Image (cartoon, rainbow, N blue to C red; front, side):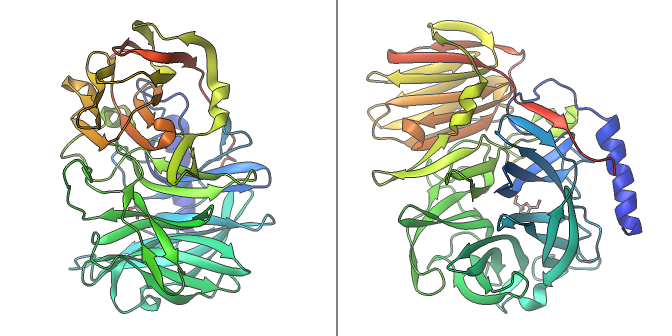
Length: 477
Ligand code: FRU
């Protein structure tokens, strides 16, 4: 343990044990930072009977800052342990942030891969020069990252990329290990690099993956995974202009179908956004022991403050994960389904009346009959609407409740079902069994909200939801 590690541990202990965010707007069944800031899901995996969820964590500032990895684990996705901070920026090759990465496990050990961020002081632009983006591995043992090893530095990456190379995701296929990394080229094009390795330590570049025409200047958090007979390339591109109702957020997250050979000739389909709401970025997927492909996103987005904000920042914390979603491919369509485990949170089932003043943690399933116009409102300030003629579904805010959020829409040729999860200051809306999803934060004044149903339904089920349980399990450092 070096001196920097010791000092950081002291500060962490102080901030995590002596500060507690103001409970207003804290979520009941989503994972959040214990204090301060959370961004990307990292190292998601199922290992030795437990789900392990790490996260980009900036405990000292709710506005973000130096990045650590925080750590939650659970056997059932309902009872969680908060296991503290296993990974700290304590080495010369990761001292300005232990950035995003993954966990790879063969069942015997859990190995993480992540990016060590280094910002050299000097007159640099930090894009073409001045930044180290190191690919590092470590083992997770007894809840701590041990045996850190720096595997690649900027000198090892191909000639055509800038200093922005990051977010390794590793998987095994046909006895070989593969790694995908996101990158920004010197021509300002977002790409992904594919590496292969026999031993998990020595990596050889085998392919560049990108679109023919540039699609953004940087691809963050790439993830390449099989889904039934398809292969999905998920990326979070930066630098895409809005096109009508598409690509409305400052940065995007979505996926391509990759046909052909990712290590040779391939073709990318058009890009589809994972989520059409205001608050979704940098998702990561993993497979659990039931064989489910599960996706978790960051329910937040960087650099959006010019447009909308999160008033929790002044209460000592910011951001959360989305609910975990199972991704399936059915009748030619990719669907995102809230995990069935979430049903354990349900209280008694009720039929939703036209008006209801209810606690702000609830789930709603509406089977719709010929929907048109306003469908649902919350606090007379947040509206879900469907325009049958134009085939557009819209989530719209009025007044202060959205803290600057306005409206987001998607084309939907028909609307049959709305499945909604509300958690104090978040909403996730699944349309037509997860064909489209909208995730957003919102900030009602009270912890009771006025819910109105404005449409006719075949069925309208409502449940208040219990909270997940989180125990603090971290060893004192
Ligand atoms: C995405 C991202 C990653 C990076 C991490 C730093 O939100 O910018 O590319 O590794 O966040 O926190």
